[in-house]
Length: 610
Image (cartoon, rainbow, N blue to C red; front, side, top):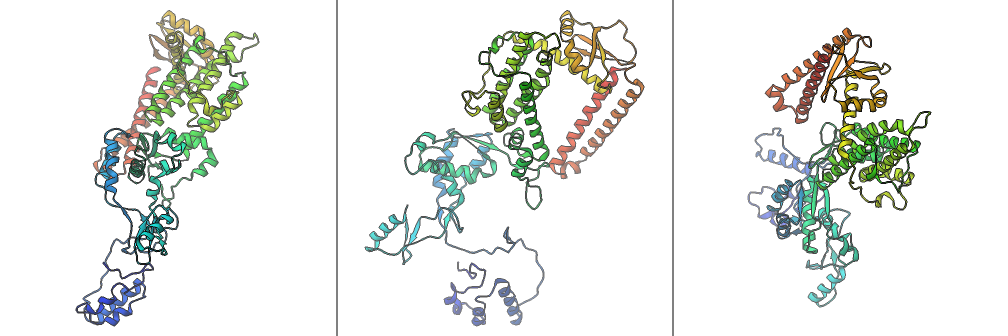
């Protein structure tokens, strides 16, 4: 099919000049020739005017039409037939399809295989030439008569031409370059020295895991598979881990026109590279899009800061690595409990990483580092690490310090893949780096903790006791400066023993003035809650205004129920659920659930004080 537009979108008759006089019913060939060289808009206006002059124009009316425009220039794109190079992709696709079918290559999550197969089993010829300034040049040379010679180098092409013509002729290389995805498909082996048989190529090909987004399964993943199998005779990787796309906080795709693009370099400048990396890791579910914004990156920074502060606290309290410490021989219930918790964290992190669940890996690390090590172990260890005038038990303090150092080393190794900079710095500052840097240190392993079940039971009760008392105090607005007694009723001997042993921790962490035995008849205004077999009674009369607090709880419960009712009414309307964006519907469901949970919490608080 001849083209009547050149590359500048001007009318050209070069391909139809000879046919002009043969066109039937052409009233004025000279008029057509006069269009040559005119821009497309001018030529179209002239054609309409000529049709009108000839009486062939019935009417002119506006018509809306979908016309493609250039992303950068905004100029209308005109179709233009050009000569291009194609690759028979169907031939290349068959071995790649077979590699996924027989399990040599596996997708994680598995359902992305369906996307791969849908594209590959219906693949079309692949146009591999592009008219760009940069890229791998098409390896094709043209003789003066148009004969094409495809070769690896120009010298090889010249030898082919010499064999055909019997003499040397001037060759011109095709100006086009290879499609970006064609070049990218060569990456797994071309970066290792291919086509030469290098030591790196023998050692590192094939690789193990490819981590990439689902939007380029066909563009990149499939091309690497096809190229690797064709040129290397083996797949380029064994596992393809597919993650989602990074979107804004409301789940919208980032775009410059919307103004919701996050500049990672700006986020690094403000929050740090570790914070950004950990935030992405925390929210990277399998194949699930990531809703990312400054607030979530700030959460990552808060976690990194918590890690720094914990390390600083340990340093200030004489914690240092002890190569002779045997954690399996720890004696105190506190140390045995936290070492057992570290085992759990290591197991959860390992399972998550093996399943490519980076969000669950980050969650396991966060739970142990923040909730267990920082919030509980270090707080419960303070009396031992910071003894009073009597000096305390030096052996117990030494075991706590050694345990803290050991656990800090575990935490740094667990977190290093997601927080490389801060962990490496702390590792070196504490002297863990002798003789290895953190990047080369062994991954932490689980160990046998003596009598771990007893330690779990004892410290589990302590944590639940302190948490329960804190909850009641927070619900009743008891000021932190006011100490309150806790009385136990129907408590087993083991419970009374634990209460006495951990009374100091309860005083510091739950503001408990004393732990005693409850009378048969509790005083009015006493909050009650059940903990295992025992009932905890916290007398509040005289500590707070019970009438005012009861009114506040009822008022807040009413507000929560009202909010939950509004959300339920909105979600019950089919027009809202069907027409509203999915993220808006999800947000309203979350608000309803949160309001209902808040109402239930306040109802329980009211029930405690009667």
